[in-house]
Amino acid sequence: MKNKKIKRIESDILRYLSDIIANETNDELLKTLTITAIDLSTDLSYCKVYYTSLSNLDKKTLDKEVNEASSFLRGKLSDALDIRHTPILKFIYDESLDYEKRIEEIIDSLN
Image 1 (cartoon, rainbow, N blue to C red):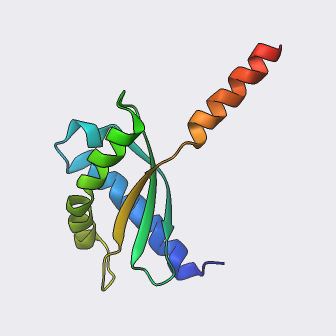
Image 2: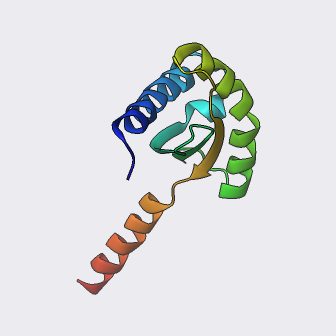
């Protein structure tokens, strides 16, 4: 179980990353991202960022493009966070919304 400090930093990362993507990037692909969850390691060195996108790109291409921009986002995040070391960001496409859509389609087809 994560302690309060880790949960607070996770919420800060979520808030700051969303703000950076919305206001400080010029890349149109990054502007289509919505961050859904943050999973920070207990030693604060590694951070999984779960996201969805409104883009029509396939998941592999999207993952590649977003992870290439992770160093830029990490640099901007280090300016905003008040911790000694900024964690390494790994972006992972959140498939839970796609799964939810498929379940709804199955239920609708049964009715």
